[in-house]
Image (cartoon, rainbow, N blue to C red; front, side):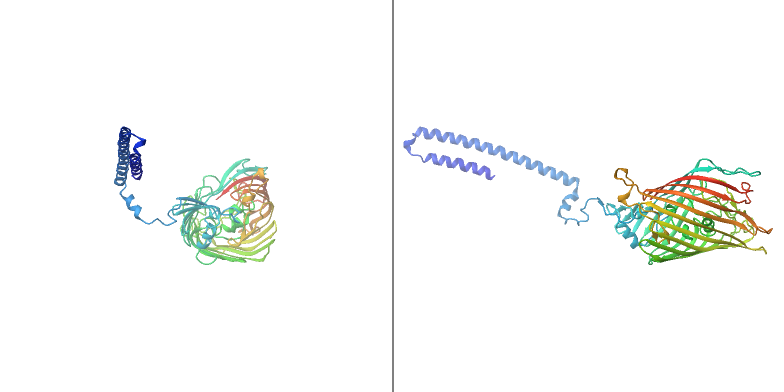
Length: 548
């Protein structure tokens, strides 16, 4: 409107000036003509102003009509305009990515549900990359995909422990009167296919881990663990449920960290007494920088009351379940940058062997430290009238820079009822590993054992940058003797097995691993039909592994 007024003011001023001109400069007729032209110009200007005002009115009416329609469609929009602005957190983008500098997490994640205190979980979460979606966060603490609330009080972690073995046997001897047995020149086996689920509320963690690849043959599906844990006490974990109690140095380590494909035979036999996978357990562990202690009361293994059992059968139709226990203590008396010295003692016992239709019996059975479907060469057969089974022995390990030495010895005792004498078995191993490149093995105070070689993010496999991950060579000498009282009629001939093993382990990054082992085994005669005169042989087996 001020523009319109300025135009009229200018026109009126011009008319007034012309009317004041001296008469001598224009005649009366000329003045009249000039005034008429000015009047016509003013009329034209007024018409133009009317048109512009009509157009402005039309635009204003259209804007008001559109606002009225929007208000009717969304009646809360106008109300929201009067509300104070939301807090800064709510006005942030709905999806955000927080990138952090990776720290020292360079080893494979565990093959089981990870149990840690809420404080340690928050610290691990603060070190990994996170994606925030609304009030939820997705991250990878300890290398495991995790969904959690902003404070980490509620969390769900989903892991993976996948190990596929493939290979075969070379030159397994067969003597007169023996069955050939099953020693494939090439075959494969899903050794482990675990999917750990961990449900957390602050310091309480429930772990459920199905296993789709357990055992010596493909197709054995079952449960690895299902337990509840409390980690609210300093460096302490209390557990109840189906669990694999930690006993022996070798067994304390995750299978993702193994030096060779399988545990030494004697360690495998010791743990099955009362601490194998999915064993009902009540107990706990405590650790510090220089020592570790743990103990558990144990019961039956998951599935052992079923006729078709997941683990090794112990008889038919269990009518009275086993009870037992484990105890382990370890120390680290020497700790320097280049040296870690580990010493310890492990013990395990079955106080009451399970009762079946065949009475209270127990069987030791072992393969030549590979699990690809081969026949059994070493076994005691079913030992009858067993009252108790126990084992104990020392642990030793030494790391010096990139070199690792380990050795353990265990003695197994079987107490029998009905006036039968006791039996005694034994076994030992010594192993060596050397990390050629990559980060060397280091000690884990939480496990009381050694972790796998590490691969830093800037050292992951990338040939274009001359980066190759980590490479390790390993060797082991292992003996398991299941002979007892051979000179007596009540003795047991289970055979003595000796295994010389070598291996090569390559870690392109912390989540993947490739292994190849060569085993030469010598087994003296036992009670099996495939080993009546003693057998020797060789095996070459590889493994591909993924761990999250």
